Image (cartoon, rainbow, N blue to C red):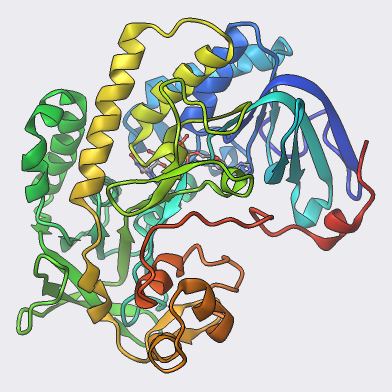
Length: 477
Ligand SMILES: Cc1cc2nc3c(=O)[nH]c(=O)nc-3n(C[C@H](O)[C@H](O)[C@H](O)COP(=O)(O)OP(=O)(O)OC[C@H]3O[C@@H](n4cnc5c(N)ncnc54)[C@H](O)[C@@H]3O)c2cc1C
């Protein structure tokens, strides 16, 4: 199985464009959903291409150290390693037998519809090559990225995202600091805090913006998902053992420091996430891991007009039917692209989609597992929906768009004095969202500040930065 961008035999060289054979199925994303889909489809006789921007399979959840780091027990940073090991060995078998062509380092920047789909992938500016992968059907399993809500000091060195802290640990075997406050909202906070303390960091507090009370509204859903409860309880027990304090209905409203973060201010929140005056307290730390949930990464489909739905946490996901079909003929989706719900849901949806694509029946137990996990995901999303008053954490000089350094005051001026009524107009007037990340960091915050917080799918012709030479070069036949 190829493990690095250089060892695939059909890989285009620098400056080349390569057009593939026509596969039965092209899977974009080799995380839990994409891996489960590819190995299931290959096992049912389909010839598959599996593309991923990264160098190794596993996606976010099964992220693991590069072989060169010499990790002796990478499984210790994971629960669910056995499932990944099983998927990896099936991938190896199918790759060796030519049923799966596994294309690492291929970032798909656009998809063209048709009887035969064409996925355009860049191998990056360093490699400077362009691959066109053709397939009769496509499954989108591109996962999610983190939602960031800015606050004063959020751009200081030492402030990382909660998923970023997990990624540093799981793939780089490094800690973001020795004394790390974990903050924001969502189940990733407990996972990140539990990994950090297990790896030797001190976590003075986990600061969760919600009260968890919403979970009480879904007792039957909780009871139907004992594995998810056990996962949460496992993290809880680890945190208890290490004396980590969980502060509910609270948020980090400021990070302090000059060269890097040295402390944070934590305030209690009311039910709209408005800081309660007088409740502030300072906690010393040398790192802050902060995230407010995840947003489905769906640009490749929304660019083509695929139907979307609003999820209970106010994000936008692809709308799919019970067979994981999107509204576009020939395009399926699985995992976080259909709404954030965790690795086990992603595995179930990947397998289910592959069975439907292969025209095989879906075992009732698989369908039931998917439905149980999806119901849990919706409950979780509703519980962690950001409150509308989080914007009161901002000061006029707080950068909201960190790529273009646009402060909150400039966005408010665009709305209140220049009459901008939506995020797009704010962007045109202030450049917020025009930088390298293309609004992935500041998009939700800018939309909220412009009073345009009705969730809307991003629709852009390029899903990632593409070297001009690849756009301008001759179209491969
Ligand atoms: C930063 C981060 C850290 C996380 N850490 C944890 C954790 O520690 N524990 C936990 O329970 N959950 C974690 N999650 C949640 C986790 O994403 C899911 O539970 C699970 O991994 C979802 O599986 P998936 O297959 O849908 O997506 P992912 O695992 O995200 O896989 C998506 C894959 O698609 C690839 N991809 C995306 N876009 C393209 C493109 N245009 N072209 C080619 N390839 C592309 C990515 O490289 C990635 O490998 C994390 C999420 C994020 C964003």
